[in-house]
Image (tube, rainbow, N blue to C red):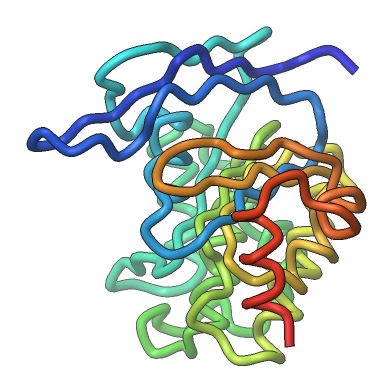
Length: 228
């Protein structure tokens, strides 16, 4: 597989503190999960790649431009209905009116929220709000979806539903870049693992190999500590 994304010596320094340190990676897999302990820089790296943060050094190179969307751990809901929350994202993206309506209906069906389309989004449960965020992403028809700890604050049932939707994205051909500290989730979703510790990449390994025989002591210790 040829690389669709390259990071070349990516750095981020804030107030004299190095948060991301000389990260060089090539991405060719369909589903890459970024693992690491709290404070490792996982979310920061994701934001650098997506362009939400400007690096202090190094660069991000794309083989081809990709339509992108991002889903955060705590989604922001507008003070309106579920339907209009999804519709608004398409309006901002410049999608025409009739097409906006069609995509919104389809996206809400995909995430199982069509019956709640007229409900105020802010009264929904946390899991339902995350599904609204995923519907907004689905409606944009991304070629690459960024997911930052999308189930970290959800109960097990909601997490399973979110994982189902994430798998639907992958089955539709969307590439995934996702952060998590949940090893079970990483086993279920990842094609490859990037292991980050203190802002440095210590491993980039096929997922099965990472869990069978991690290459670094830090990754081995992380797996040992996190698995029951």
